[in-house]
Length: 381
Image (cartoon, rainbow, N blue to C red; front, side, top):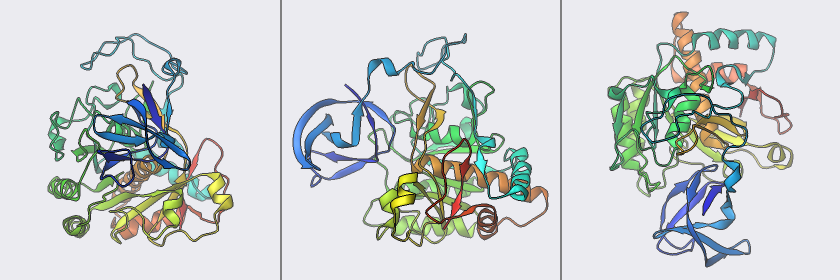
């Protein structure tokens, strides 16, 4: 049976219960083959759980994927097969997507400045994506270099070819994909570095992320994107690594959480740290109904909206996903554009400088902003 997650879903090891140890998180929008369902702890009146081996997933956080959904909205064109054994015909999307031109800002003057940012493509800026690795055989990511990749997850497969989860490949595509028929990322001319921190079992730790941050510092990157959450009780090493990266002048961007997480007592780590730009995701119903204050550590919000990016699925190169992971990667891409432009103008580019630019050209959050339409607004808190 194949399922697709409709929310960030915890993986519980050993038994179908929230009392069982949390092994990791599957982010919203991902598909996987499972067994079951089996009976377990009832949540919101639903006691059915899916399983993979000893790992359990609450069925209320996922939907079954119909077999005929796979080819919807896609057309096949001639091409060559790849190392994953996919079909020779690449199923490009019916319409190509260029994220470099889909950000919405608050006014005509700001729109003109954005065009100047977009024109740089992020050239000369180094962005590290700390995630589940990369599928290096994807046609829109063929420009990525192996000497800019490293594995910190203990994976059997290393950093490339077997991004089993697919999350890192999606983030990389949203930031840096290059294609005239598939997906073009927000900053297609930036230099992408891939630090694999998430294992195939969906787990990552404060230690693996900390080691990857130190590696990124050694690579002299400008931006570190972390579309992830760290749940380790002891985050001392992580906080120290974040501090070292910030002291080295690196801009850190991380996922704060989705919806209700943003009005809780704590957002995700490392987004919780002062030296990290924290990004959240909301939808229109949340904007209209929420009356609670957004957590003070959240810096930016973007719409909770499906975004097309690169896929690792065996029969597909592209898929849509929504949620804070995608919005975080999008913000990292925008920062690469701003950084590239400011360098060309001889302007300073500290994290505070970049935040001032983002705040100046983004919308003020007021719980009423219309999120519909093609372009995506960035809102400041």
